[in-house]
Image 1 (cartoon, helix red, strand yellow):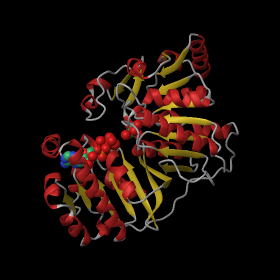
Image 2 (tube, helix red, strand yellow):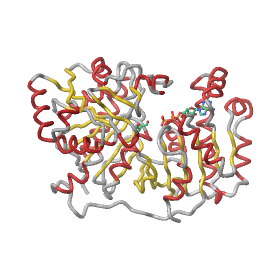
Image 3 (cartoon, helix red, strand yellow):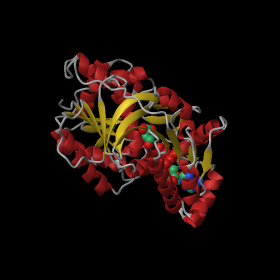
Image 4 (tube, helix red, strand yellow):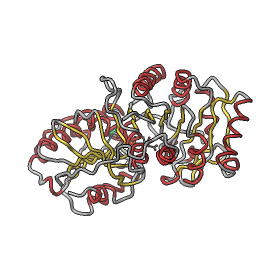
Length: 422
Ligand SMILES: Nc1ncnc2c1ncn2[C@@H]1O[C@H](COP(=O)(O)OP(=O)(O)OP(=O)(O)O)[C@@H](O)[C@H]1O
Ligand SMILES: O=C(O)[C@@H](O)C(=O)CO
């Protein structure tokens, strides 16, 4: 099968988020961890390459995404998507804008759109300003993000310093008038030399209009949700054959491990909910780990009944996180926890776990790497933007879900288990 739509995501959970929304169509979606070192063969209609370049140096992010684009082109894709966070996480220099400009140059196109809106998860854009729920981005918890604090809510102002060409806006009033009106507005902006168009969207209906208007642009950029209507559009216009490969539903043994390294407000609530159900659990403390290593948790894990879906978590409140970071450094505390959760993932898999639930973007990156996973097929969605995925790890098929810190409802860990039939 030739790939129709090639996507590049700037982090792992963001990639599974996009994959989950594309897979709502029932069509096969394949996710590669990093740029495959083999030539494309038997690629899916929708291919996503997950990178880890959100906060990488600009030159590194540009080089990696260009290499990913090259692989996707060799897989046959002619339309491309640059996926970044629905909260537009970026540094003052990038990497959203510089990567978009580099991909545009490679594709020989002079216009693209920027639409991080994800209404189902409370991200909306109005008059170029991004909201998280009812709060402007810069007043949301994103203002204190450790790596990419977002201190402005205006997407044009955020993007301008990241690009060399002109930035403009197609606002909600235009989007509300439909796909044809939006196309005309983009053409008018093109004559004014606008290369980068922020597009307003407050509801899924707006995203349907934007996707319809922009479906044939060589490059689209945004959060996952703006890409969601594309599979149906490509099926309807014959870009994708009606017999294109569909998603699979393999079955997995119910032995499960839940690993949480996210300290977001939502993950804290999810961990509390799961603990409240009386599941076996082990709380990791970075300071104890720094002193004694992971032996205690690995010994505890070795005697657990994985049928009871035990939880190992470092999830903590901001005060405890700060204390650990003051003593070990931000990176030091993070690495100790990530290394421990990764070792637990491997030990649980070797002990028979076939369902692995991971919370946290960085944590997911570390666990996926430790499990030696290079390709994931996308299964059923657990919550908006969080699907189950199927992959091979250590010679076995496992089901793996990677949850962004802020995604899912309080009952996510049980929701995940309920979504897979054994
Ligand atoms: N108790 C703790 N003290 C200090 N650092 C911790 C603690 N628990 C987890 N960490 C580290 O905090 C970081 C959490 O980042 P991660 O990306 O996994 O979650 P997140 O930021 O909530 O998720 P996302 O990026 O999807 O929003 C990881 O590096 C993790 O190892
Ligand atoms: O878009 C989002 O919010 C997520 O897919 C994400 O990128 C989390 O890191």
